[in-house]
Structures are given as structure tokens and as C-alpha cells.
Length: 121
Image (cartoon, rainbow, N blue to C red):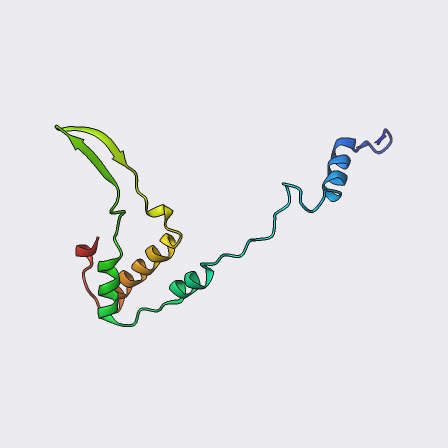
């Protein structure tokens, strides 16, 4: 619609795109799909809500959860690198929760216990 008196210009393309979005079916790829049930969600919540209140438990967590992926390796034969195994920790579905738990344990050791954690890094 173009009015010359008030200089209002409305482009039909904009109106059409709004109308098309409003009439898209529920299963269209542009609309978010409902989240699927995550079987590990209770375990994730439990790990995230785990409080560290004991020095021995914090030491245990800091020792048992590695600071970097232990699977990443370079395979060297006769002094030459022939292959590289990439870090596989990201394949662990609970990786982020374990890293967060280790971080909270280290923070507890520093803030509450006043320990030096450089040996854990």
C-alpha cells in the first residue's frame, strides 16, 4: 500500500512473511520442537546440586576427575608423529557436570581450607 499524501509505504513482502509465519504447521523446522526426555537428567541435577563440605571429599574429587582428557595422545614411531588420538572426553554425556564438580571441589579447597591447589592443575 502506497499513500502519496502521508508518504506511508508498506511492502507486501513484509506482510506476507508475517502471515506465512503465523500459518506454519506445528512441525515446521523453523519452530522449536518440544524437548525430548533426557534419561540422564536426574543424575545431572544430582551432580550439579552436590555440595562439597568435607576436605577429604574435595581432595578425592580433585584427584579422581582429571584436569584434561587422559585419552588424547600422539602416536610417535621412530621419532615421527604418525597419528593423533583426539580428546574423547566430550563424548561423555556427563562431562560438563564432572568438570563443574571438580571446579567446585578446587574452589572449596582454596576458599574454605586455604590450600594451594597448583599440584592438582
